[in-house]
Image (tube, rainbow, N blue to C red):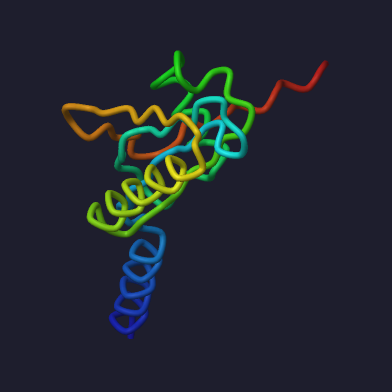
Length: 128
């Protein structure tokens, strides 16, 4: 009698862990993309679906502080494959070139990666 309950619980746990797994995705950041003066484009990087846009922007600003710290507008594009990401990045650089905006594309020898999970911010302690 306990065996069916155990099997049900084991199956439920397996489904829950599979549902919470985060897929690997790829992305790049674009800074000063509205009006320049210089559009900054990060290299393609590997991340997971667990990261929100604000978390990725904070990570990009830590990775490339010289290029992205003072950007007025910044966004992150996400892709399922490296091929999609690289094609989008190349197309975007051409489009900004046609708009006569200066583009600075950052290149990296190796593909940068975010950590497996974003840092959790601790809630401030309640006053006693």
